[in-house]
Structure formats: C-alpha cells, structure tokens
Amino acid sequence: MRDVMNTAPCGFAAFSDDGTVVEINQTLADMLGYKRVEVAGWHIDKILPPGGRIFYHTYLFPLLKVKSEVEEIYVALRAKDGTDIPVLLNAVRREIDGVFLSECVCLRMLQRHAYEDQLLQARRLAEESNAAKAKFLSMMSHDLRTPLTTIYGNAQLLLAEVADAQLLEAVRDIRQACELQMTMIGDILEFARLDSGRVQVSPRAISIGEIVSRAEALVRVQAADAGVDLASAGCDGVTAMADPNRLQQILLNLLTNAIKFTPPGGMIEIACSAEGERTRIRVRDNGIGIEPDQLQRIFSPFVQLDAGPVSQSTTARGVGLGLAISRDLARAMGGDVTAESTAGTGSVFTIDLPAATVVDTKSEASIPV
Image (tube, rainbow, N blue to C red; front, side, top):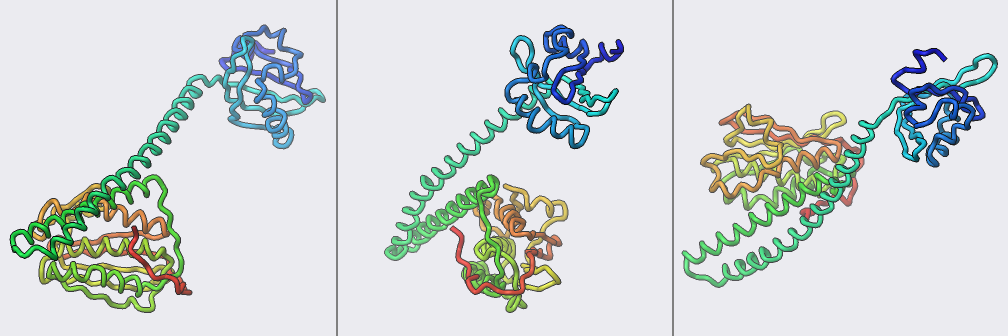
C-alpha cells in the first residue's frame, strides 16, 4: 500500500466477498487500537459490534453487490478495548486481478455523534415538555372553567332577581367578564392543541349556505347590540370540502372581529362564490381598517391591534389568538385565510377552501366545544 494511503487522515480497509480483510491502513488500525498485521486476514465481523454485523450481512454487503457502491453510510466499528467508534463510510466494490474487493473509506464521527446525542436528548426533553404541557392544559381547562361556570350561572340567576338598576349593571358586568374569561381559556386551549397537532379535522362536501346562516344567527344579537347591520349574499348552492364545525368556528371568529372593529351604523357583509376548483367566503366590513404595516402581523399568535374608540375597553379584546387559530384550521382543511384592508375604510377577510360537487346531507354544524 502506498505511503500516502497508509497515512491518510481517514481510515481505509478492503475486504473480499467472503468478508476477509485484505488491506487496512495505519490510520484505521490506530483508530481501532490494533496493529495492521493483526487485522489483515480477519473476517470483518471481528471489528464490528453485534448490531453492526447484522447490518453488514443484511444491508451493507448486499447493497454493495447490487449497486457496487454506497455513500455516507453510518456504521460503528468495535475497537480493541471494546468501545464502539462511529464512522461515516463510503465504499465501492470492484474486480481487481480477478477478485472482487470492497474498498472502504471511514471518517471518524465523534463530534457528529455527540451532536446526535444532544439532539436526541433535546427531543426527549421536548416530548416530556409537551406531555407536561398537555397535562397542565387539561388541568387548567377543568380548574378554571369550573369556578367560572359557577359564577356565570349565579350571575344569570341574579339577573332574574335583582331590581336595583345599579346592582343589575354590576351583575351584567360579572356575567360579561365570565364570558370573556371562558372565551380566552378556550382560545388558549385550542391554540395549544393546534400547536401540538392534536386537533383533528374531517373535511367533507358541505353546503356553505347552511354554515353561513347558522353563524349569522349566532352573532346577530351581538351585532345588534353593537349597532352593526349584518347581511349575506350568494351563499345558497355554494359547496366546499370542509369540516363544518371547524368552518363555523373560523366564520364566527371573523364575524366577531368584524363586529368588534366596526363602529355603530356600520355594515358587515358575507359573500360566497365558487371560483373554479376553489370556494371563497368573504367577510367584508366598513370599520376602522388595518394599517398596512400591521396587516401581516394580525395572523401571528398573541397579536392585538388597537381598536380605538370602537372597543368598549382594552380588556375585552381576548388574547389575540382568534385569527391565528382560524388560519391554522383553514390550512388543516387544505385552505387558507387571508386579509385585505384599507385604514379608515374597512377590511375583507377571505376563507379559501377546496370546492366540492356532492353535498353531504349530514353537514349541519354545531358550536365547537
């Protein structure tokens, strides 16, 4: 063997088809803690750990016989002291003087091996963290919702009994605060489920008109209280592939936002259209609009825009998760939610979904819990 190969900064070995080591350079011998004359003539199994022997016989050598070469194969070699040395192996099998030899170049991978161990450890910690988060969210859902439900129920009872106007207003404030807190808890839990991939969607062919009609009914009182008119057009007969409950959740989020940011006397319109292989639902308002530099931020988690004089209080705007949840749900159904806006004029939010041709008659939606 030439001196340059013998002293190369990477290991080299050649073995015949029966597994006999024919050549080994000094670099590889030193790496394994042997003398070159010791290894020459051994079966290659002797410098492989048990798992490596199985890998050699079932994958590495069969692949060399079929393809005549392998690149960047991770293997471990067994050193004289019993430790395993990870290496990155490139090999070619070719005929030399009538004998087939597999020539291998081995590059030691101690740093990469350490990095992989660190990545595996980080993954384990992340999985443990996710499990702890899921447990915490489950406990939070129960421990926070239970007292809020009690407070809300008693506030409802007091509304029927209290005659004093000042006390009546205080009880209404209590009820409204409970509703807000329950909505915020629901948003946080939903976002956490989406983030961990635990939210399932079941798209099917549905009638958009049914979803829009139900959403209108659910927010009509809220719109009336805000002094905002609500209308829809072109939704009957339009279909889409979507999960009806999740689509209703998205539409309610968009309508609630539109009501929140539209001053009294304003108008909110829902328009539906079938455009080729896509179905689009547009929620248009003539509210305060969104500044251009803020338009890309609104779908980020925990981002809240100032509602100005339209909002009754800065504490009544939730935690800024509604739009982030809506976009993630739409994308999970093969669609998207986008926004266009002009400050001082209004906004248009568009739900884009795959179109459908046959409607599932079981498409009636209900409020997601």
